[in-house]
Length: 382
Length: 255
Image 1 (tube, rainbow over the protein chains, first blue to last red):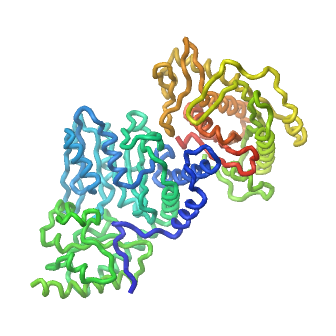
Image 2: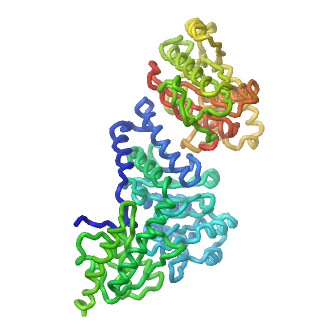
Image 3: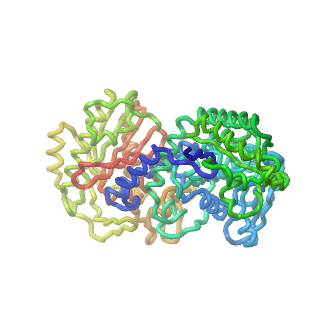
């Protein structure tokens, strides 16, 4: 049996259209896009087309798009770029952010800045009222993700954006998990900074996007992390990864054509998977599956089952026991702890996420495979 | 502007189709095509002749896209003796010769049945200098420019730094991006005046490959300081043969 890949929150397989665009780029757009010859200008033109596609996709201007190596770099640049060295400032974020946000904030704290990490409710959602209450005169930035990578909770970013805009505080949104299945419009969200990566939307790894609103950069340009050739308006020095950028542009193009219909299809696959599973083995949901949650993902626990042991027993199925980025940390998920799950339930948690190439048969087969092992695991543990 | 063409006239060749990609086929456009650029010191060479031919082909194709389209042609002459590189420009004291022999271009235009205007960069430079001198007296009038010592810097949204001019003894010496912006200002104004009933205005500017940065910076300066939603700049870059021109399109929305 071929592996059934149900770990699309960790990364997605590359779409064939992206691979084709990157092959073209590798053979036809290999020149440095900054070079002043025809080959360089041709590469530059393709990079700018990709930039335009990304800009249209999120309702931004072309000059507001900066290409990075991925969401981790984008998050670092967004946060450290706004909270510049010097006088101590204050940053607000939430307890369920990705590690690339939380660890960046931790580094700011070590540098003498103050960080408020807001709690979330049992669904993993932050209260906009708490964000408003946390704002101070010296608050330099609020950072709230669009959707969570472990429990799929969609955050009320637009509500928070209205509050931060009124307070004159820049808002950063890590949209890495939401941009593939939710409509993302930077104006509607009210964000000043937004980040995502290519490999979560069937594009290449090693490339990402940082949106910086012109209204922010005109007033106070971000402080770059990398210095050198002045690429990306001086915000991110280094020769552009042209093939990856072009691949990202292609990925965005594919996504833009059918995102809503695909979200409905994926929600259907998830429902089929859960229905099949319910007939075979008891489980409890750690994430919601209705409005306010990503349509393609679910986090659940099998009572009395150690998820890591479970995955060892399940062949040909790619799912995750938590954030893949954090899976080597050997510590319980900070997100599942933040929503108040007991340690036993965290130990039994499995994250399943469906994607573009998942079929209904895949969903049913995966449910049966997990159920078969989960049904015998408690007895073995006992 | 977001108007696009869905079907191409069979008379539009592959070479010029990308240059006119955004010219409407459903409403009238005024198009200025700038080709034939040359330096007075070097005279009219292969790039000038070939880019002028490309301009003519582009203009003829633009006319075919919509029966109401209006097309003008212009040749920019570098009579400044300015040498440009990617990130520096130098102004030698001596300018080019006073007399300019345009006969090869005139003959080409006659063969194509068109007329063209000539724009001297010295005039553009002087206009830009006057404009910046007014700015020096009232910097708040154009907040996108800032004074950094002797330098006048444009606050670009695509480049780390755009040097617009240098102040020397109370006089402003405009740098290339500002001169290019002056060109766009002059010709969009001309299109507006001449063809007020055209819904869209395009300047198709054919450049040598080496001029990429200065014209791109100039396009940004114009579009952000004077550009309107109806205006679009198509920057075309080509080698001396002009066989495979590359087009980059900019509107005010891009910035």
